[in-house]
Image (cartoon, rainbow, N blue to C red; front, side, top):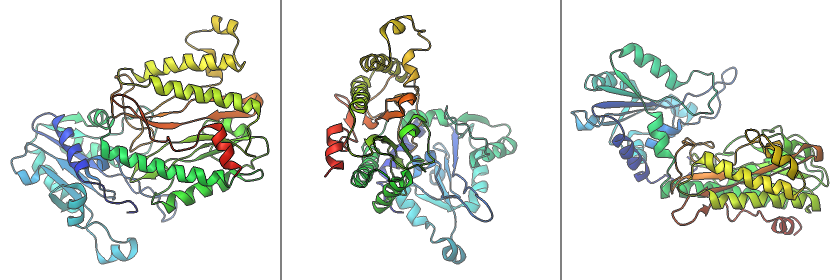
Length: 429
């Protein structure tokens, strides 16, 4: 691991809270993500099932977790199953976790090799009335690939047809929405690494630089600071490219007089950050660019003030729409008469700001969470308004990561330059 061991109190407490939310005489099973193939004999970089990581801290494939808090044998109430290493595996793949290492990371006292998983599972199911199954139920999930979780669900239905099946995902989503201090520090670390990458490119950017060269500067700084790399596929979008929300080809030359929208951030210990900044290629905003930039910045600042405990995300988005509408009127992108006649179900501001302002952030970039419940202290959100004017080849988005606090919000990206004058000064040093 590149990152330092996480205090296992995090995982011990996460399991405790989760167990408190399930029914009596239940068993719960979690399985690690698959190693995903590419072509021939190659595989993608392994990415752990975030729910399994949340409960164990184990960042290794072929891992299983069984929780059975009411099982008669106390030694089998929490069982972690990991891949048994061998000399051959050590030579070809490197060292895998030992049982003692897995105990230290997870805080789980019973660790077995994973070839014992199905035998132990049958033993525990015989004493359980309910079997909780995990499946990706994220509202934005569109994957058509059969996952390890899908395969286990199919196996369990056939093997234990008389069991009462329950869902783990809603329970974990509710718990993961509220981050504790350890998690917030890990997200802060990811934000701090992102800051280093951004400051690096401010000194590097000039007319004629290519988008992919800026991407390379970011990844250099991220990996150099113990990150595995990008928290998500980076967007380095200059000129008209900034008006394509999910542009990620990053293969164009940055022209004088244009802006570069950079939606790029680092992960740390599987926790994600999510930053967007927009800078002038030649180190100086034009008046028009500055007017639009300040409009976006004003929306971001106002949105931060209303993203507070007691409001739902859906209601918050409606309020942000009103703020954006007002800013678009100021910079003459909307007309007051047209606004009065607009369809309330399809407001005119969406011509220039067509995406949501905020989403949950944590182990996933678009982290699990419910948009219909009131916000609570400990929620971590992005705030990312933008204005996109295709006819002007102009797109500006600004994004920070915010912890909802009891008295006031905490901006985890407060040290990342965002004021236009600060950006200009740094680019022209």
